[in-house]
Length: 566
Figure 1 (cartoon, rainbow, N blue to C red):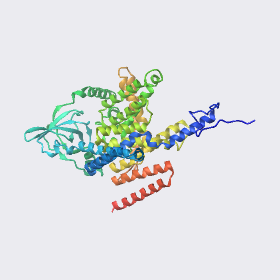
Figure 2: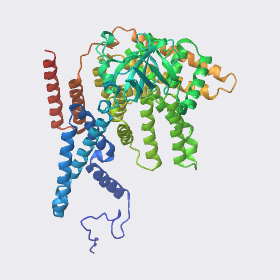
Figure 3: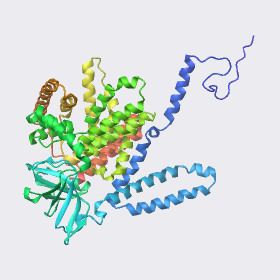
Figure 4: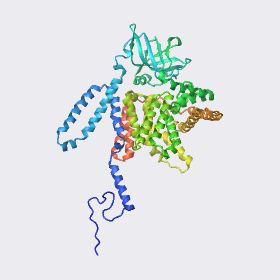
């Protein structure tokens, strides 16, 4: 008896089932999954992160502005766009073969767009820039919170609104760095003051230890500074009316902290919760800087990340119920932005708020949860709003740290998998510190010329403690109307702060805790990132070409370092 089999077509898997009376079984499901995974592997990885593909040429255009390539690049882009548009007159099959030119045109337009945004954002291109005129009097609006510098002065960045020139008040633009006496009451962002002193060019001091402060401020469009005394300041308005509610809430929080804490505990509590660093002592700030945990006492993405995680945990029962996901995400986003404004809406916390908002919007619209794409989209939006942020050190470090965590953290965690729960948590903390340092270290070496050698130990101690302290501080503010509970929480918080300060100062007292006098320049930065990229690709693809690229980068780096030292 002959057994007749059905005649299969070239693809026997039609609509997910075998033809005929064949039933779908486990083997077929495995075969189908294997085929789907093979299809996924053929798709380039960058298709899942479209904003990264947009961000790279756009940021490249912003960087190219320093070389004054705006009009040559604009001419090249215009000619190339006309040439690509002429492809419409070619036969269809030729248009299909040359379809890559459309992507190249998009990249050129993004580069040119970054150049134009930088051109119009450069204050020196403005006719109203106060640096081109001699001023008899100046009226400015403060932009940042007061910070206490090494020389005992409050430093504030202010926006120049009006200058008196030739006996007339003229509208002006630009920024100036103000130095005010430390004993003066702090001026909140939005305050308006006037003075008659002439601003001077910002220059580097010998005490800067190689840090190019003038160049750093120039990248933020601040080229002048002025030091004022008590009798040289005319305060026109303490704060903007639109910010009075936020300032009032902030002052109430600071008052609550004043009632529950004293000394170093109060100073650190204010820095952790609302970003007020005016009471921090110089030695303590130096200890946190030398141990690589200065980000703890500056409101940053870590603080918003802790609040984000706590809100997710608190609202988890609502998410499991019938509450719409959009409402839950909107509530989380509102809390994050309110906290950001209470903290003074500094650039670092605003960037983090935009980043988490992008993630929440992606979840609300049902898009694939791709954190890398959400982070890239937040960076792209921020740079569209203010391209000068690319030169901000905080912007560079925050996004370098996030990108480093996304790329390397999972691979480093997999190196060691202990069964003990405490060891697992400890290893995860160490892996997080290691992975975050990979892409941030070149920036630290270029800007500060020093590196904290004991950053793993200091982060292992300070990061978990700072998270606990932040949560306790939020509970103290939230439960202020209840008796005894805030006092008990304040006692526990004070003990945690004292313990964290003590451990950080002990680590900083070690002689080899900091590697100083590292003379890196921008060429070292570029070559370091090329070497990291080549080595990462080699570990991922295991191809000889990537290894050769890595070795050539190292060789070029060695040669350039040799000639630069001559």
